[in-house]
Length: 119
Image (cartoon, rainbow, N blue to C red; front, side, top):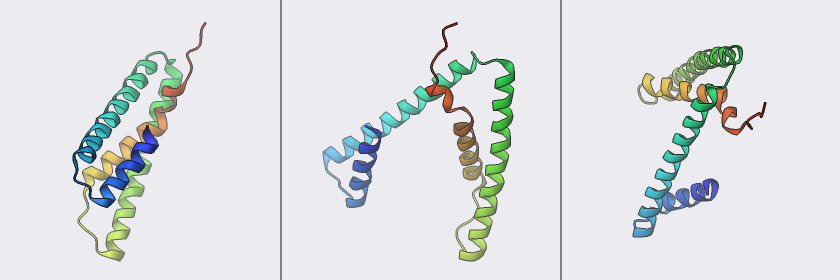
């Protein structure tokens, strides 16, 4: 559903379709993506409780390190693009949200797909 829905959504937006099916499909796809993100987040939180302290500490340190690295690199990229292309103003909240969410995804997304160990 994910990739096919994305292709259909891009086609609807490209063609600027305004019929009832297109609007309902876009609303349904947005709800699907929201529920999928909520499911992933809840599975990650539940599986974080099962981790040992050492592994959790390593993941948290990786998250903080990647958040800092991504935010610095995105700020530099925005400054460089503003210098060369005279784009819009710097929106630091979007840069911080993007870097923190990307770092969270890289650090913890494998918890969603791990199999539970029976011990």
